[in-house]
Length: 251
Ligand code: 13P
Image 1 (cartoon, protein in one colour):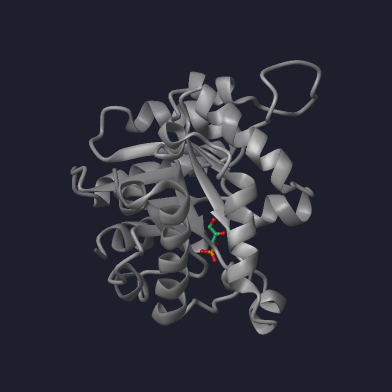
Image 2: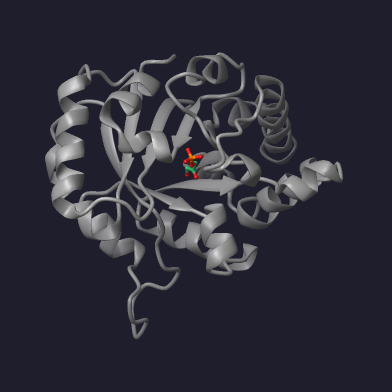
């Protein structure tokens, strides 16, 4: 079902104590309602504590920022989807451009991660988006179409319906340059139409598609007013409680 979601991707920020303080501040400023799902994505080591903090609060959920594709074994330093789920976390970000760029994660690997997440009842938040070079070369639609196809379109319809898509143009991440509503709506509409072609109208209309990339308390309302933008995946602005809550209140 299509939902309104604001997810805060903390990336590699906050000690455990700082993180729990941030969660408490967010909870204090938020109204308890599940009209807008607020997802907090802290580092792995915070997951169990954050999940415990929000578990009885309506409308709050927790996401991991990644998971390993294998079920278990000799993969020093890695965390499986089953382990993530065992902390009370229900979502996992997969394919963030920082994972694709700095950790060399390719489409084949990301499809495996999606499968592993779904097998462990985690909801994947699957990220995709073009670089500035792609956009300048006018191949941004082609790039995103390929990412969709490689990462998600092998899924059976019943599994695809569980996935959340996050469009994050690489040039907008952490740069202060936000996509215009025209650019965001254009790409979200394109993504939905590709989903329509592959899985049909009902599934495409029910897919939640988030926008990410310099989304903040000032521009969220305008972005979320776009017909095909169902919320945001927020980086920097999610590290300040009042900004995160303001963004969640921007629908
Ligand atoms: P910023 O909001 O800091 O641009 O980061 C976006 C992002 O990467 C969220 O996953």
